[in-house]
Image (cartoon, rainbow over all chains, first blue to last red; front, side, top):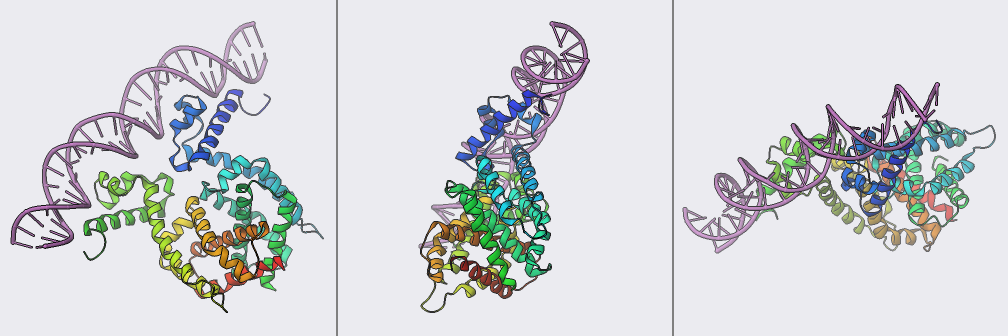
Length: 190
Length: 190
DNA sequence: GCAAATACTTGACAAATGTTTATTAAACGA
DNA sequence: TCGTTTAATAAACATTTGTCAAGTATTTGC
């Protein structure tokens, strides 16, 4: 097999995903129905249920696809001996976002999904927390936890703003600005 | 009339709200049904529809109640001649959160509602943007917009973390820390 | 190509959701 | 207190959702 899924599955999944994306431009997730998705995707309503439990389950699975790419970026940028790898990592993240802007906008933007944002925060926590404390030479504490929450939410917020404003600035510019914000913020511990 | 709503309305709304709060302890909004709410609240299922269009509409209306209180706090703390009012404002916000922690946790937390968070950001934008630029003596720009998004999302994130970790630190402590983060962050423009 | 596997469709079904109408009960105001 | 107003109920109804069994069509591996 050329991919790991039957071509029919790829096709119907694509049709459903496109339909969902189109619907999400109009209205929030909570009043998008399976019937509508099936209608726009031009598939039988029953077919939807062969792949997803409901609309929320569908969104969750789409999230996971982005997650995987995202995790890879973070894993590839563990802080090394002398450089903290923060800037190149951020550049790649902004690139990932721009390459998947349709879906990304849906997930972290206006009509987005709080559960996704929460999962993103937790993933970042697991992945970056240790790196962060290493970069800043700070050992974990309640204060650090709060600083961390502030920083991660801030980053997601700035990404969302960037996506929703048409991504005018380049990934490099954004990465540079965000790095500055993160590093500046860390001086609350100085 | 003693309040602005019929006593019967107050009673059934309270019953429904309590039922919703109880259900939200168990599971996320998207699989809470009207039937369940009506059952726990011990009212006729049809009665629910006399007040709300669906479960999401119910949550939205509850949100607005918090919004009103929140807006009042912000309005009451416009920057004055010599003091910026940021710290006392933050203290009151953390107090508001702790007084409504059940609902607040639901709205900005894990199983929260992205639409609410988005509305909150927009409200903050309208209310605070001008104040912010005044406090920091910076005139509006793309950079400032991004800084603003970062800061607002960061604040909401830290509030969420505080709520979900049992609100161990006092509102005053939190306000002081958040103020420090905001002011420190603003030095990216220096 | 062909057989086996499996994805999709159709149509039917029970359960849940949302709407409506007539009726009952409670709250309000004078 | 009494008449008026308005909210809640009950019960029936149409629509939507989620599930399933049987048949059709497509893909895959050989």
